[in-house]
Length: 88
Image 1 (cartoon, helix red, strand yellow):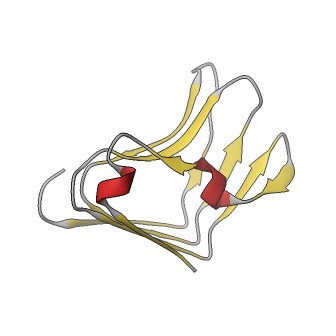
Image 2 (spheres, one colour; image 1 turned 90 degrees about the vertical axis):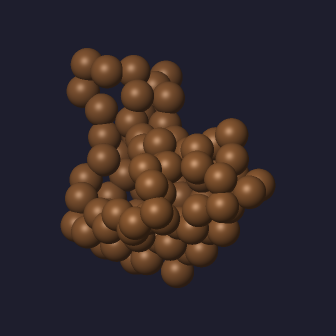
Image 3 (cartoon, helix red, strand yellow; image 1 turned 90 degrees about the horizontal axis):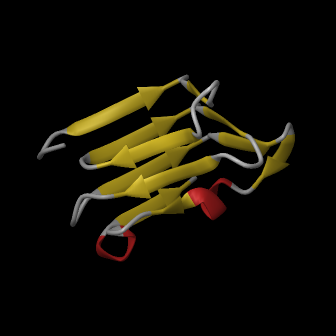
């Protein structure tokens, strides 16, 4: 968290034995060319948890059980309404 900016580029986010596949965002964050491999029955998310932060998602994809889904449907979090999210 904090005042800096975190950048995740070319990452693959998924889950194995865990029940979670996602990110809790506490700082300004850029997601670039990332792939989110979500699975039914797991907790799949990109959650805004820091007040007044920005999230920029560029050229990222998401699948649920191997089928393409809208990444915007997985953006949420307790501070989402206090943040700026841009999806390109």
